Structure formats: C-alpha cells, structure tokens
Length: 242
Image (cartoon, rainbow, N blue to C red):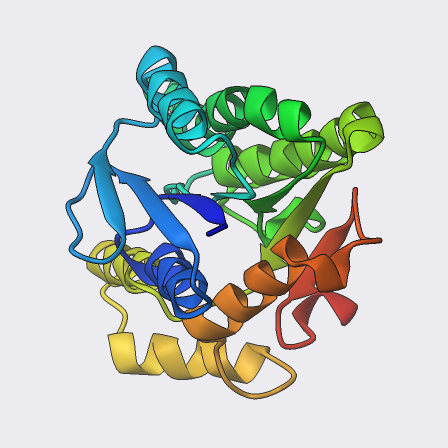
C-alpha cells in the first residue's frame, strides 16, 4: 500500500525539496500551500485558517485511510526587535509559523491514532535553541515549535506516533534571499558581500542546501528513525556548537 505524506509550505525552498524527496521514494505527497506548485498533489490552503487546514488534512486521511508522514514546514521570516515588532507583525508570524503547525497536527492525529502509527516532523530552526539579534518574533515562534515537538511526542508516544523538530541553520532558500534582500534594502549593504559573510559564519564555510534538509526530514519520517521522538535535530553546519 502506497504511503501518504503531507507537506505544508511545499511549493518552494525546503518544502519543495521535501516534496520531491518523498515522491522519489514512492510516497503519494500532498502539498498544502498558498502558492501553486506542479510538484506533488497541490492543495491551495491558507495555513492561518485553522478550519481550512484541518478540513483538508482530515479529508486526506479519510480518503486514503492513513497519513504516514506530516512535515510541518510552512513559515515566514520577520526581522525586528520587540519595539520594532507590531502586534500585527507578531500575530502574522505566529499564525503561520506556530498555529499553522498546530492546526496541521490536529488534523493529522485522528488518522495516525486510528492506525497506531505516524511520523511528524516540524521544521524549526537553529533559533529553536539559540537567540539571534533582531529576531524577536521569529525566534519566539521557533522556540514554540520546539516545545510543540517535545510535548506532542510525549502525549502520543503510546500511539506509536513520533514527533521531532528538525532545526536547520542558514539554508540557501528563497526565504533566505528575501531576508538578505530586505536587509540590503534597509541598510544599503552589498548583497554579494553579505552572502559571503553569512557563509564565513558557518564552521563548514558554506550555506546548507534545501535538499540536505529534505534528506534529513525523510529519514526522521522513515522506519529507520523508529526510536527517535521528542528530539531537536540540528542541521546547521556546526553553527550552534560554537
């Protein structure tokens, strides 16, 4: 029987690479995103709309009788300290980054519980474990996802449902380039120089690639990671060990 995977925010960057990885391993993959994609089974979905998210995911579980893997990847970046972060900005970051995962997991759990199995991978960040400047709301949201992974892992271990947070460092995605572009627009900095400086900050001397994160996400969802749950897994080129 073909396995079923759901990826949120699967139309670009880490999400797109993850959709492709699961497809390459013969999963039927659903991509819930607001941006259309021709890769996988695309379902237009606003992750801020809890009713919409749960309805789509519950329907997938009912149609196929199973959900084997849920990758909670959808997220946005926002730069600013606490004074620079408006309530609207704060709510937008949490509605997508945190509540999007909350609704997605709630939608998948009934099917996973019924089948007494399932793997959930929450895409956190190196900022799930450390602080970075000018990153108040984003950092807070990623710490929240780490907590979500740990508590949900404990609550559903008896159903053989595993939950882990995968915590990438600086990965070269459209989200990364957008953040650098915004910084350069505000500061007048040279993008090539900023990019080189970001690479130099990594102990391995380069940025990570989306496919590397996707490979790790696939492993965490696979039977080979059957004894791993409630963990925060870094993939950051050694950044957080410094």
